Amino acid sequence: MRPADDLSGMDELYRDFILDHYRNPRNAGTLEAPDASCEDLNPLCGDRIRMDVKLHDGIIEDIRFQGRGCAISQASASLLTETVKGKTVAEVAALGKDDVLANLGIPISAARLKCALLGLSVLKRALKL
Amino acid sequence: MTATMPQAAVGASLSPAAVARIRADFPILQERPHGKPLIFLDSAASSQKPVQVIEAMDDYYRRYHANIHRGIYHISELATEAYEEARSAIARFIGSPCSAECIFVRNATEGINLVAYSWGRSNVRAGDVILLTEMEHHSNLVPWQMLAQEKGARLRFVPVTADGRLDMNRLDTLLDGARLFAFTAVSNTLGTINPVRELCLRARAAGAVSVVDACQAVPRMPVDVTQWQCDFAAFSSHKMLGPTGIGVLWGRKDLLDAMPPFLTGGGMINVVRYDRTTFADVPARFEAGTPAIAEAVGLGAAVAYLTAVGMERVARYEHELAALALEKLRGIGQVVVYGPGIEHRTGVISITVGDIHAHDLASILDREGICVRAGHHCNQPLMEKLGVPATTRASFYLYNTPDEIDALIAGLEKAKRIFKLT
Ligand SMILES: Cc1ncc(COP(=O)(O)O)c(C=O)c1O
Image (cartoon, rainbow over the protein chains, first blue to last red):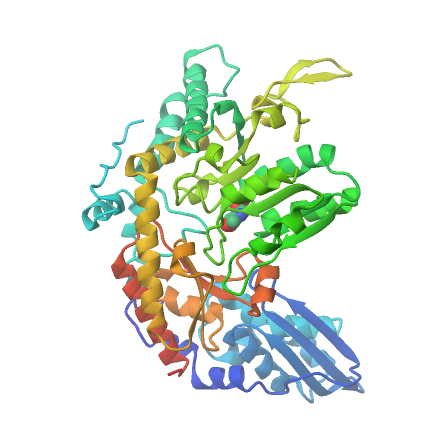
């Protein structure tokens, strides 16, 4: 736990690059004829993400995501699309919670973990992983 | 009951001294999440509990716990008496002419389901209309959807106007052919206070039975089911200073008497043979199995507490806090307040702030020790209609203070700074 009166705690969570990914999501939108696609939401909070993937020889050639929700869920999904482009499906299969958190690089509380992981879970479902 | 009741405050609302005395009764307000004083602005989801309620339940378990209506021994008689006294206290609290009309259930959700299963399945037929409103909590929507699907009945909805009120102009047309009209007395998202008596009378004139979701009304304003002229009303103990796990379905005696059981088993029977059973009279007919006895005792203590404070005062004070909050929120740019003007609302306020998502806002406020609700508030269709995925909701109760509203405002300003909004 962080010291009680650390007012910078939240600035650390909502760092500039998180806000940037939230407001200017990378790979935003949908694909014309995706090879894999999935949309899901977190029913508790209503965060919603759709992932469209174009595959070529088991490699993620292109990816788009569309969603709405909190800064953490949307920035995390945006970052994820950058990470996985050009990677193999097997490499995506190997990604887990720690990779997402490392990618985000900010302290995520238990209550917000679902938000951070929504993008990866949708992508994995799209790829039937 | 061992603990003392709060002293009644002087004046129409609650004085700062009275609120200070009330606050002293709530142990949880001493907690310091993240090292900050706990500012609890989520009582619409579930209220905190005064020591009087906690002690009443503790006392029950320590001194006279036993199953009720069964034991021929002293402590069972004490438990039975306490359970039935809680029922009478609730009847008095909501203006019910007879305590048998108050059925103990698990929560408001179960109360509504009881009506949908028992009354609904024996009275609603194919083609009948079930009228709801666009501002219903999922608990007062999904049970009716299920009933409508099963029976081939049709659902209709009273529209919500742009300022978050029910569109009364369409009411009589919508009530035409309705068997049942289920609506909330107070919106848990918009804070709107609906004209319950008028809605019930117009339902009755149209030949429809009225079901009032009183979940947000009973905790925060004087409620009198006789004055309302409703047929059923459901509410939960945990939102009105009482424990979780218990709620009340109030129903008109003649309707309840004619209804078949909902859940069946022990405690609700008259004579049981291997092949058939006759059922007990109300309320026992609807209370199958061992009930939540300690919770009933706790709810009784909660009702005693609220009665001692005075529901008129609770309502006025909450209204004052809401007015203060609305005024201060108006002073912050990029804040959108949903719902009607102050004259039609209670202390439940839903907002959005610029492009900050409700969860992010709630996380930032949490770090300041402020508890608010973020999300769809079990009101997904209404949120769709408002065109927002989620709002942040602050709700006030008798233990909140103007200083806490200032803290909320400061927290919102901070969130805007973090999100670089001006
Ligand atoms: C208006 C309204 N109806 C019904 C409910 C459901 O209450 P419970 O979950 O206690 O059954 C709530 C509580 O969230 C509510 O605010």
